[in-house]
Length: 414
Ligand SMILES: [Mg+2]
Image (cartoon, rainbow, N blue to C red):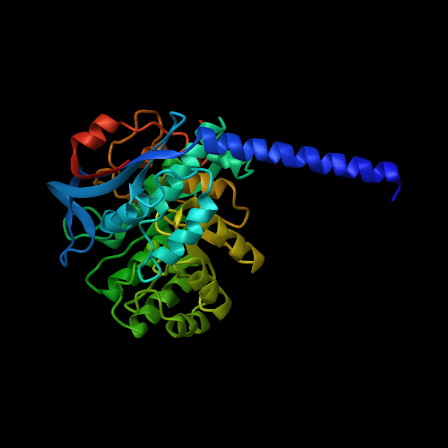
């Protein structure tokens, strides 16, 4: 190397170090987390109530079902707030435990928090971490004046969606196989190119099979169909009967079939050997490492992730890249702005889950948006897609008067 080249390289390194130090210094001067507000709040869902066993929400005429959600607002010393609504109320203790530990810290340092939260909650499911990570992505987007999808490097603007139903009910909503077929055809007329049935919760396998076959018969061959018993089938034998029906009806996937809870790798392998329809499990396993073990075990055809449950957008994108490396598709669970930004930046994924919907049920989402963002059934485009929000951060504005006005538990750290 010539002397001139050595001098040039030294000069380049010096300038690089100076710029890096300035950036690090300016970040730490300008941006520290000063306050975190966690708000658990309640809302009503029209025409909804508990299923017979009390663990699912089903269509219940003239009843206002109670539901709840968790909001977070992270304020920083430069006057910008990162916000997110969609946390897991059952995990509010975890969220509070983590929130107080990052007061005074640099809000850009999401990867440090990911590592700390993972170890700090190693004895627990870590479901309280996601809401904080997503709010910090929202903050970063606002701070840098761009959307989270853009920060992730995505250019995709529209996401093909499937209508994902409530569980069946005995009350005249989704009560018969024909009810599902009628509702699927309604969704197709709205623009959806895919439809997922959550079946009944009473273990009636014949009715489940009848609905699967009727759906294919009545929507025709061009609509993608999926089934999610959500672990309600009682036995492996019941699951095999239902899986064979999915084969006959050419379903795109079936999901968490039976009472192993969607976590038994040996059970899923038996199902995968005897049923041709691709199986999707993993929604009930937490953590990048557990999902990687499931993927390489050969127990699932797809990987499942939800940024709310799986350590935020940071955790979801790590999981998506793991799946990509294995040549597998990853399906993002649930609806919301965080899901949309993640999906925009994932090549190996298929459908946005517009959940939960039914022919007579109200929206399962609280009316929290003070902007035109919507996860209503009817908000689908004629081409069957939902847009990726283009505003800064996660691209939505929240109605904090409504959220705080319906608070049932408020925790503030500063
Ligand atoms: Mg599911």
